[in-house]
Image (tube, rainbow, N blue to C red; front, side, top):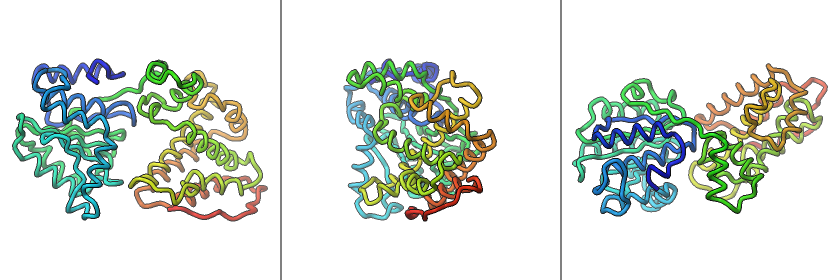
Length: 379
């Protein structure tokens, strides 16, 4: 896939291609935008074009540089390969570095945060000679860089070696230290229109039922990557638990034992024991939080009579309407604030199920009595 096939954010694509055509690439670029909007894909296209031996503002895909960089199309496979090669070695002594080409290094959280060992390795690599005059480092999920480790990166950004370029990708730019942000040229990625996502799915997944395309595009909220990677069966399962959870929290249902079943599902306890990738438990819980946020957003739109803005879950509007009739504005604000605190608490190895239980039970009406015990808590 070249620049012509990239979907959305034409302005950003145009800016990057002008940089390539003029051979003026900043030392550090900051790609800002929601998850799944195409930041990593566009970063890889940019790097491939910058190093291509045959073209200037795009890439040929056939030259000696382009061929190995095609591995960037499957980031998951690169990560698995690097972890397999490392084996049981100490992650600080053998940092997780993805290097499909000698002049290109990709950093990803290992498994939850960017480690000091990775930062030290990047500092060494940035000072080594590049085979084609330029060396690129793509730092995916840059917000996962611990503040105490950011100083190592900052030293390189302040005085970048000749030919070294850094692409920082993040959906939460203000979680990066201001000193890092100030040394980067920011490029903002906008969400894709819902219609554009539906059209893409219709073209590339013609066997997908229309109702599934509509729901996937609505749930994705502007993120093509989310729409493409969405497991609708899993989404329905989690959303059912989330609706039950919110119903109990709002006093709509009178049996809090349902709450504990719902939080077991949302926290991932019901899937415990299944083999998962490193960091998979956190990713599963973040998915559950995303579903809860989307439902609360829809309830807010309905209560404000602004459903025309586009519900994330249009197929359960009736259920959301029943929930809306039970709550006040302050209830929505308190639950969103509580989910924010839970999300921040993931950095401290939060007890996920207990946190969700506590948030729901905090506002239960006094006449509802808890008649059962939690089925257990999960870290």
